[in-house]
Image (cartoon, rainbow, N blue to C red; front, side, top):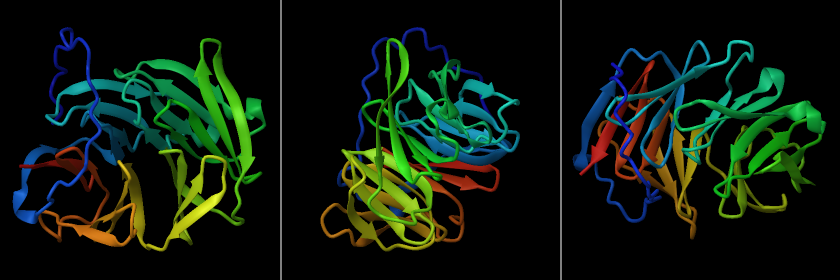
Length: 273
């Protein structure tokens, strides 16, 4: 159930805190915080304010907070499949429509801000896109095996730089731009990290990855059977204990003290006490 939207008129200035650190994620400390049933979830993502962005099977995006309060809705039926949502910046959310090679930016209430038609820049086979923490947009073009970096200024969206990758035969399923690095989930090689100019830095040989996120310097990897943290030092996978093992077959994300888990077409929120 999605509750009516809260009154946000007195929010004032919001301080965004991005925290993972040394939280002890023991199984006994998780408790079910909120069940979100009947929301037709095809996939979801979250932001560092713990808001949830649900993409439905009708390619509509619905936003609500961790308590279930409705905060916005957006759909563009002319654009086809909504392949990915990036809420790195919760006030400028990136939506990617590959059928029309178009990126749409929406605000925190999911009102459209602007669009980027990639074919205008000669990009015809964009496969993955990402919003970096500095507000730039990174696009991987499957036709040229190049990354395109765009930044937003007062005159619109500008192609800042283009660079080829130093690793051939890359087939990205997800890209994340963080900490002056580009992290790529490849269907054959696992997670690969490049520098900000496409130079190969390291490969993390971990299989069956359903998605990943970067929290501080750690890589949080979701698999069918669990959730793992890859630390910046050894990169050895460290299991993150979950409330129960049997119910975590689908996608999972961490934000601050909360764990978000897709359960069929619903999303459950657990809180770490």
